[in-house]
Length: 93
Image 1: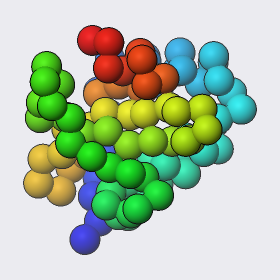
Image 2: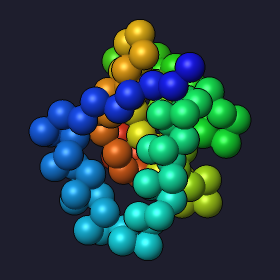
Image 3: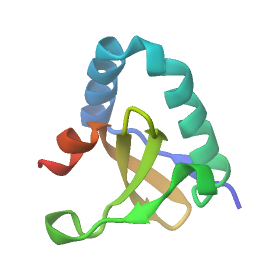
Image 4: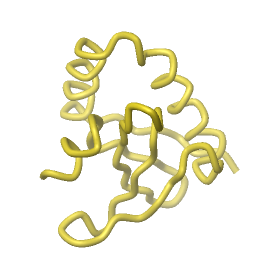
């Protein structure tokens, strides 16, 4: 089963800022998005549910050495990115 990514305007703004700050991660970022569409439960993504004030969201890692994560709302066969950044940036909300 494949999923479709649904991008919001606010997420797109965050992603553009993220990629401007970290252009060296663009390839890994794009690969992560492609893999999410094909199989969000792929082990390399390390998808996991969040709790606390972020309950209902999920997180995946783009690059373990730099510890960048992305949060997602997963509804049926759609994945809606919410935020992208460093571990501290996305969990600080």
